[in-house]
Amino acid sequence: MGRLFQAFEQADASTTRQHGGTGLGLAISRKLAQLMSGDVGVSSEVGKGSTFWFTAFLGKGDGASRRATRPDLRGRRVLIIDDNAQAREVLSGMLLNMTFHVDEAPSGKEGIELVRQAADRNQPYDIVFVDWQMPGLDGIETGKLICALPNLPSPPHLVMVTAYGREEVLRQAEQTSFESVLIKPVTPSMLFDSVVQVISADRGTVREVQVGSSEIDLSPVYGARVLLVEDNEMNREVAIGLLEDAHLSIDQAENGAVAVDLLTKQDYDLVLMDMQMPVMDGITTTKAIRSNPRFASLPIVAMTANAMDRDREQCFAAGMNDHLSKPIDPSKLFDVLLHWIPPRAAAASAAAAAVSSFASVPTPAPSAVCGELLVTGIDTTTALKRTGGNRRRYESLLQRFAESQTLIVRDIQSALASNDSPAANRLAHSLKGASANLGANDLAEAAAKAEAAIESKQSIAPALDALRHSLDSTIAAIRSVLPSESTAVSDLAPNADPSTVAQPLSRLKKLLETDDGDASDFLLEARSTLSQVLTPAEIDSLLAQVGNFAYSDALRSIFAIAARLSLALE
Image (tube, rainbow, N blue to C red; front, side, top):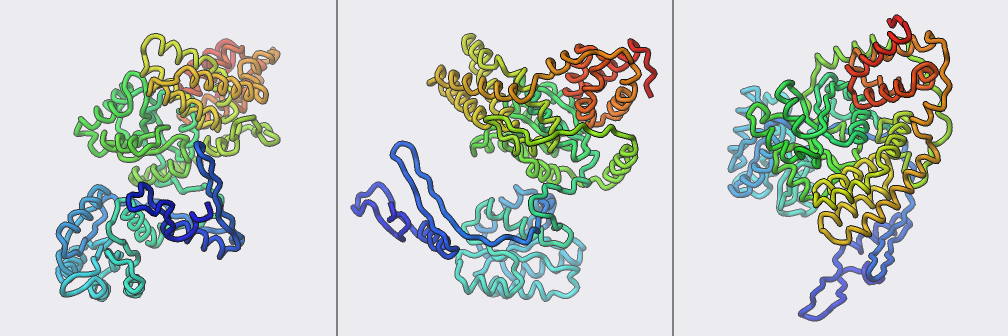
């Protein structure tokens, strides 16, 4: 096994060998680890797999790092200078797919002239990609002459493109103000990374943050209208909890048919689209949306628990612009919002003013939540971050998950008995996504295996048995730590004084009337006070209506409660 870390070792030295040997990668890895006073190694067992490990001694950082927000690439002007027409065509195609405006030049001299003309028209290039080896002026000289052009407001970013990765070329490129070097053959991923690297170097696109901080300035998208298309209630609420931080106007659709209908009635800045839904799935919905020229430029972002390359390709082929894997990473979600929603300066100012004025309304102090939340089999720490950092909301989601998912395996079996494999697959897929979002990783894995078994029509019964066992264990663990909401409410004795709920009902009414997402959190905080006077049925209705963002229904419920109690609400 130790020979793996030696350079150019062959396990099979015959000329007809079926397996290759080692190259330099593992040998270099060992050398790097040893330079950091560590080592590398591997443990392997036939039929089970291999585990590679490394150790290293690292110094402690100073606590600050640079975090760059993803720059807006749409409509950026770039120039490709390359004497090879095929190379220009390949690079141009990739850049066009990234929504750049692309011009081409077959020589350094013509490229320099295009840079000068663009500056004279006040349409300067943001980036110039320059091939290294060209007849006449080579890439190095071309870069020097571009930087020396008079009357340039600011020189374009220079990126060297070369098939030679020799140290001398790299050194010359760096000395000639080239900010990045791409080694051919260039892949879309390499190109995108290079573009983001050089554009993010512009002043103002990078800000200092503390290590571990997840704060991102979302003010440019305040007030944007987003359509969330997701059939699973748990997943909708997790997404809403994150989106509240961006002060977005959010509408919801539980399937694609509802989404298409909403799009005919309201303009949206972005659509977050689940893939597997009843009635109309995400792929079909996206194709239906794109068939209308009105929505040709509407950003559609997939949100799915399927993270395979073929799933992403299917999303993009249907017309989606981006892809987020479940469980949703908050920072990636925010990056997507900032990337695809055009900045809304006026809306941001208005939203900030509204937030500021609304903050003057007194809010009851939240009741203390003491100690770390520990639930066996659930990664509560990561999931709490994923749900916006609000512990009460997360606890409520866990309770509702335990109440709503008890019979999910039976529902899957019923669908299979009715020869409705798509429905069974969708139920397993939905459970996988909801479990992952809430940190129940073992349950999510069991649901994924059940989903795969249903798709392949092999070993379904054992997969469902394992899923039932994992689900029962997870629900039991949740209930051992968090009592069910209905039980917690029904155990409270009612108080005869209705005036005690006038203030929290008035506050909830104001939140609902302004479509404020904080209504859900406030209701959780005020539940113990409200339950002293309201009936369990009234509490359950409010929780369901506010949790599903049916604010009009919740307001009607509040008015009915106020009438019953003879309360005059502010």
